[in-house]
Image (cartoon, rainbow over all chains, first blue to last red; front, side, top):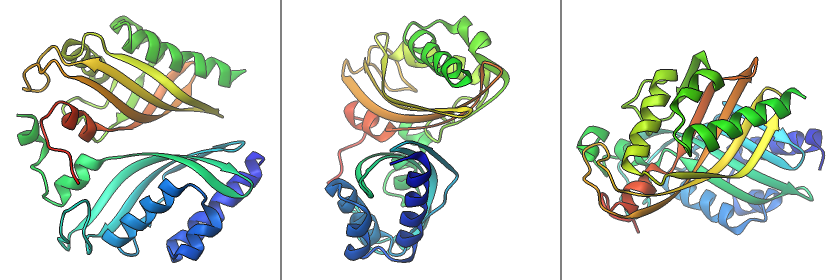
Length: 129
Length: 141
């Protein structure tokens, strides 16, 4: 896909996903099973979570985004029972797009920051001594 | 091409400044106005002096620290890099005594350049994975 086509596709994907993270919507845009599982896991823990677009970089079939995820912890996450806490987590994602679908993804998120906001681990000063 | 020049600056930053510990290169590759945002390293300032301190601290904790770029996307005035780094924990790290453990960590950076220098950087890396590989925090289910 060209850069312009990929940009348009990613815009449609985020718009659809922010309205509805049903299997039908996910299947329409994603073939990567890891990404599907990742979205389902976070939607279960943070129903209706939102992603901002702080930066979007597209070159051909490659996409990188910098984003802030916001949501309320209403379901279990990695063994942590719901806390009701609102969280705000910075993340970056790489996507590979082919044939009108996301075929691969890599994510880096401020996971330590997320766990600190859920009070599942102590704040940085006490983690690092 | 400006994008090729930018890519070369980022390559030297990763492979010479970080991998070879060439602290003096910071003044050549990084603008005095540079800002750096990384939620995992609040213990250094987000400027050029801070990145020097950060590199020296990590190379002191992991003397064999070595970054590899896994994917590089140059785009206009930005260069996006997906990277991995490996190292052996042989020196004190923020109060964590040397464990001798090897770590293998993934991260992502977006660099913006102007006039052949880096002017800002956003980095997110798997600091939790590092803490787990050092045995400081347990693995989660």
